[in-house]
Image (cartoon, rainbow, N blue to C red):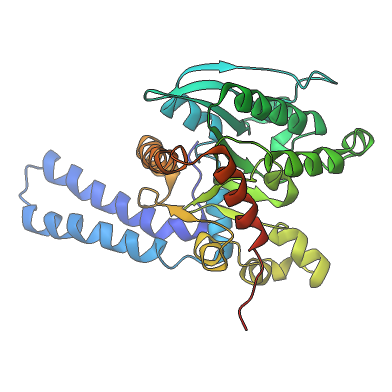
Length: 317
């Protein structure tokens, strides 16, 4: 069942009316050519106007759209010869994070992706996208394996955050993320991280210490969700849009702050309206960045990664 967000309703209604006019013209054999041609021309302009003026909270809703492609969808569409590797070799296999060797055109890579489900059963299998400590330890194991094999690491992130439950705390979720942050700086292979939907707090950062961090046009990356921020600062759900604005979580704001290095465009209306087109745009961005990163030596990659994160938060005087 298709889901329509509130700000999408006007454009969906207009599209349905134009489609109805096309059907009426064909069924009644009435020539509405000039008028329909005008409407067909105006429709993309209306779409562009609506989606270019979305508020930060509307961007968050688009990033969470139920039909939006998940990272694993992109893995299946973009990469070939994907060989999944499971388990952290300590506790278990967390399905909220998956990864393995794959091929991108003629280049061998290690791809690591967070997972979300499309229904209740799938979401329960992947813990609704919230990774446990073993998920981050598995991701690190795969990244270190990539370092030994001398292949680039690509991480695709769409998670509301790390799992905050008792079990995760008992197995040291904070420590597992902290170790990932430390060890990713030591890897001598290119690391490319991409936020494809939600980039929630340390849950996202735990696999996002990249030489290059990109974000898709309608994704967000934030230290806390707008709902959490509104509850803490304003103690009211009515403040959620205000919190989203204050957090500076959209691609445009993050690029300005230097938190991300580029914005990957999406098909007009969002990735959910053209998943194949979105995957192609993502693939082009990945290939372009890897071409640059793979030309650097291991020492250069380590230093560039260190410098990138040391410079975050520096404000000119």
